[in-house]
Amino acid sequence: MHLLSTVFSLFIFVYLSGILNCYDIWNDVPCFKQFTPEECKPENVELLTVDDYDKCGPAALEKNARNYFLGASGRRLTYKDNKDAFSRIKIVPKVLRDVSRNQINSSTLGIEVDFPIGASPVALQRLAHPDGELATVKGLSNFKTIMILSNFASTLIEDVGKAAEGTLLQLWMQVYLYKDRRVTLDIVRRAERSGFKAFVTTVDAPVHAFITCNARAKSFSLNASVVNVDASVVGNGDVSDLSLTFEDITWLKSQTKLPIIVKGILNGNDAKRAILAGASAIMVSNHGGRQMDGTLATIDALPKVVAAVNKLYPRRQVFLDGGVRSGTDVYKALARGARMVFVGRPTIWGLALGGSEGVRKMMTLLRNDFNQTMLIAGASKPSEIKEDTLLPALNKLLGIIDV
Image (cartoon, rainbow, N blue to C red; front, side):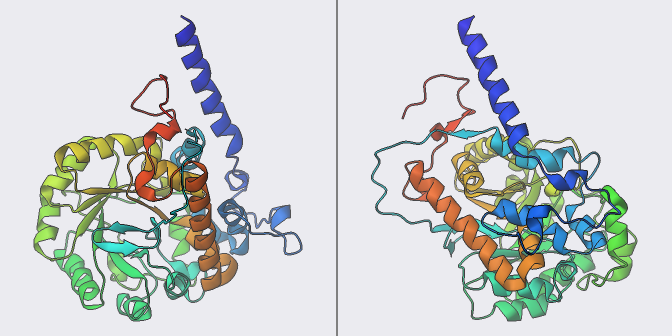
């Protein structure tokens, strides 16, 4: 009885601490109101953490552009839980470990990266800065990492590819499976010719969900437009083919020699089927809370996906997208089995606050925070990060953590 009481108390504490620590002021700002938090006014602003970018970035945008990037589906439950869920997980450091041989580099699908953090696909980046995706490339160009270009980018594939030439940055291309396969193949061929190294196919959007403030519809009246897909396709809402099955992953795999990452997976069975269909890797994602509201936070979905993939094909990698705002979040994702994490909105807030330099500073903060977290937790490199430094660890109910 005492053990059950302890377990219950522990989970109540972890749950409540997650709620109390993750208040997001933007959830309470009306759609029509232009708003700047007091600490984000020019005379007060200090961008010392990614949370600071999260708080101040939206204030730097015109309200319709702000609403587009902040937009989430339904009651915004999944959007909020993506961040809150990380706070429900606690790190139990291992002390007196020799961490003097410190390194944070890793590899992903044969690509060497300086650190296991990349940039997720985010549409219409010219809404955040006049140079849009080109500014993002410039901001990330001195990092050996990965940027995923959105299917709905506001910059031509060819221009992004050219901007990344001669830099350390590697490009992946997001691609949807359209009813008219010629649209999909056009993106694939153009990305191949432009030096992209993989394709990320998003599978959680047979239709685009309505998002708060009707922000998606209003975004099309702003100073940015989708340039790599015909406007009639986007305007008709023909995002994907409603008849899609896992066989269509196999079809896409047959059309290119580049790796296919399947993005939008939240359960182990779907992950296994995607791997069997030809996926080279899985990205656990819920579209940043912009599709199904009330679904799992990505960090909560991650362990079962990792377990399923490891059981089927241990060499296949799993990535995570959604809710990452700190180095501790990166650590927790890697401890639960992710090979790499990707961030979306923080990149946009960097763009909004400082263009390419804002993106560079945001990513530098996240990288440094991750490295510091890793060292304090007792790991000198990503491969030493283990789930037994997390509480709750999903492979145990309470138990004794072997430190």
